[in-house]
Amino acid sequence: MAPALSDGSSCPADVLVVEDDPIIAIDFEDRLFGFGVSHVRTVGSVAQALDAIGKRAPDFALLDVELIRETSFAVAERLLALKIPFVFVTGYGAEVRIPPEFSGQPRLQKPCSSDALEAALRTRGA
Picture 1 (cartoon, rainbow, N blue to C red):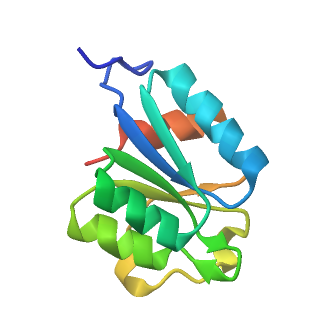
Picture 2: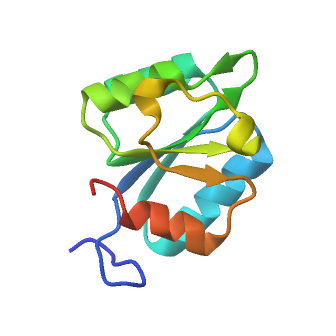
């Protein structure tokens, strides 16, 4: 049986974190494990993310919008095609330009609270 979040909903077993800042990535990883996620894979680039998805599709993904010299929109396109829920994570707030095809995707503002992160996990697939 999958671990449950605080509201009793099931927790994704495998989460892909696309984040180029190692400190933030470790923080997300620690908190996801704390929620009961059994496997967290962390990558820092679009190429690494696409490779990880190709090897094994995650149940859920956190995508930092602005990576070093690139954005995570190609990863978002792949996740949408595979019907894998994801959340954009950004430190730039409303001024970050998200393409119209992703306007309905949930976003988390960095730094995000554990409550906000857990809520993002709960809303996957909704």
